[in-house]
Image 1: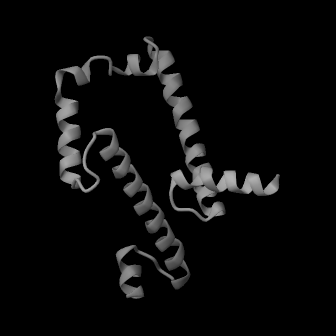
Image 2: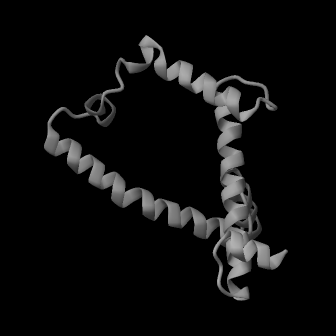
Length: 129
């Protein structure tokens, strides 16, 4: 089973199996959380299949109301190209740092989901007081 996992995820040594398994588990948790949030936002049943979520999103995106107000300059709050480029660069700098911060918090606090970070931090804070 381990060798199959190594082949499947292109891992060359046994020492790389556990970190990759952890990464797969973390990604699965993130995807599960994202699907839960999408179902909630779309007011779908908790057991709605992925295909139903995708179809609901596609119908929203293709509706006439979906395109109004979603032009890049409206979303970014600016109309000139230099400001748009600057905002995109700011996002490109911020989000990787944010991602790594969240990953570090998940690992340090030994939790799997973003929703679990704040309760653990509150618990630690109350113990420290």
